[in-house]
Length: 502
Image (cartoon, rainbow, N blue to C red):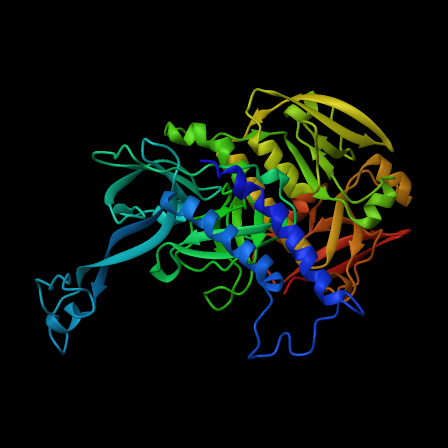
């Protein structure tokens, strides 16, 4: 679906109109508005309100273009609850008032028994094609008994899940029954060309209010470690979204879907100014598989990685803090076969600059297993190109990686940055040992600082067990403890330190 060329040119008209309007306010001297020109009872000059009217017409055109392809997704699930071992004092009719007349009276009074309670959910979706496939969030339709979709013109259809990926919170539904031949569809745009400040529009059903339109801007890109999905690369927006918006489109001013609204950052259960959307390009890479009902397979390098800090950038002679440091290379992995080494800093993957570890994880995961990928690393201050055959991420490896990321996050929250000891690091820090975890950063006032951990310390034991790399330290920290005993090599001696985790 494309908007007319006239609408596409509105951006130029709007920008020029805003420039002219701004000029009205900042011009000094003879062009200054006459007294009373903006008085409450006076007439507002057309030139002043023209830019706002142009922008309003653009928003209205974009909304009218996309809304017909946005659907409401209703779900129902029946759960079984166990009643207590006593009679209900007000009788079963009392409970029917709350459960919509669907409360099943117990058959054996005086004994524990089960009864069914229906649970209803609501979200949003968007029509992908004329065959009735609908894109929505996985959490909107997860573990439900029945799904129904309602089109913008109130026509209603049953639907079923044909493909889903829990790790990215994406699902594809298919309408059931006789599919209309007049279905409108959305067009997925290019989320990679977005910039902070771009105007966007969200459409959904917040609090059940279907076909609701809100507007805002792209606040940030590449948000990860939000804790919503295993693989995250969210767009952040200030366009108001609330419960019920999940699965709905985030649209640019060309009427293209550049994201799927998925979550909000809030501690009150509703909009607080920060919303997250899955980028359209991440979705597009999975759609061919999901539309066929297939399982998403993800690529793997077989390395442990960590973010580049300012201190590490200086130690590795890097131009900035972009990229991902390889702290360990798994034996027999695709990375080892390609010649990758601990201490390499991955700065490009298949021609794309790597911003941080989360970005690299997403790029590798999106690569098809068995394909060849070009990787550029910085080794000893010089760039080196490698060609690696991408491996397949197993569920076991994925679970371990998720656990490592949790421990990684814990390290960051404790104010600690670490790196598996490499020969280069040992030379740079004057360390004689061959194994251990080097502390490369300690945040002032953090639990790590209050535990007397210092930059340059080498952790050789954790919880009285040898530590040879970051993964082993992360495993020790992943245990449910308030504190952990560390053996630290510092200068010419070793000391025990109690690292308080809570």
